[in-house]
Length: 333
Image 1 (tube, rainbow, N blue to C red):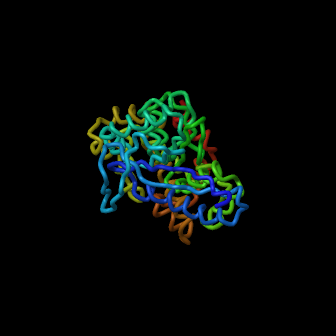
Image 2 (image 1 turned 135 degrees about the vertical axis):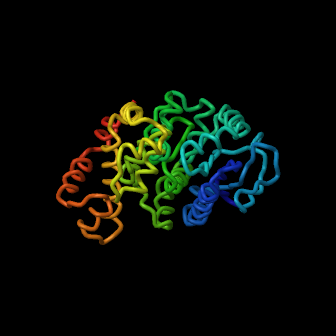
Image 3 (image 1 turned 90 degrees about the vertical axis):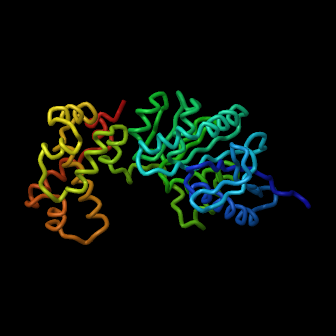
C-alpha cells in the first residue's frame, strides 16, 4: 500500500470513579477524524488507534455498568494519554475519590517521565496535580472547581477561564463540555488545523471556543474550598424565595452568628446577606436565560417583593467583571 496513513496511538486511562462519558467521547471524536482524513491527500492522512488502559493490572473495569476492556498502561507505546474526568458531586467528594487513586497517580508520573503527551480533562487535572507534575506549570480545570483547586494546589498556575491549556507535554481542559474541545485539540495537534475544523463541523461544534468565562456562575465557583460556605450555600439555595434570619443560618451551620460572620469574611470577604444576594442574582440570570418569566415573577422567585429594589441589586452585582468579582471575593491569590 502506498503512503499508509501515519498512525497516532492514544490511550485513555480508565480507573475506578472515572466519568464514563469522558472516557468514551474522545474516542468517538477521534474515530470521526479517522473517517474524515480519508478525504485528504495520501501524504496528509493520519489514523488514530485508541484504547483503554489500566494502572492496576486488571483485564477489565466496570464503571456504573459500563465495562472497559483494558491493556496495561505500563510499557504501552502511545503518543498521548488521556486522563478522563473524575465523577463527583461536590469538591470534598472529589478529594475522597482522589485519595483512592494512588496506583493511577504513580502510573501517570511514570508515563510522564517518558515525555509522552499527558492530557487531563475537567476534574482529572486534580489527579494529575496530585503527582506534582503541574507545580509551576499552567493548567485549567472546570470553572466551578477553581477555588477548591487553588486551595489544594497553590503551586499550579491555574487559568480557570481557559477551555484548553497546553504547557509543554501537559495539556488540560475545563468543564465537562470541554471534553469535546480537548479531543478536537488532539485532532489539530496531530492532524492539523484543517482536519480539526472539519471534525468540528461534523460535530456541530464551534471550533473557535477558547474560554469558560461565559458559563461561569461566580457564586458556585466561590464556595468550593470552604465546607462552611458550601453548607450555607445549600441551605440558602433552598430558601432563596423565602425570608430567613442569621440565627437560622448559624444554627444550620452549627456555629454562633459571630463565628459564621467571621468565616464568611475570611473565606469570601462578604457577609452571608451579601452572599445570598449573589446567589439570588445567579438564579435571576438563569431564569432570564432559560424562561419567559416576567421581571416581577423572577423577583418573587428570588425572594424580593419589590422589582425595583431587586433590579438595583441585580445591576450592582451583574455589572462586575469576572476579575472584579474574584478580587472582591478573594479568589485571586
